[in-house]
Length: 117
Image (tube, rainbow, N blue to C red; front, side, top):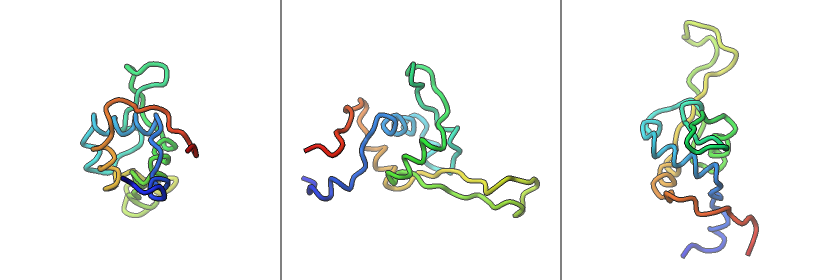
């Protein structure tokens, strides 16, 4: 059994995080290479049958959980044949993310209780 202190360090499995982990199961190619946020498709809030592209803030939530990390491709003007407004960044699944994806249940287990006993 996981010690209470260790359990409190683990990230919460929220519904949006669960949808993201399920999306990685549907799109395993994204686990092998850097990807753009919009490449990960998630169910729309109003209809699970409609898939919509993920957003940067959604993936930032996964980054806080330690499941993905931002990967910088290049700085403006460094060997690219065009100008960019800033660094080109993508996302990459971490080892902890691969483990979370592998262990993610097929059915959402319910809303976590924050700070409850």
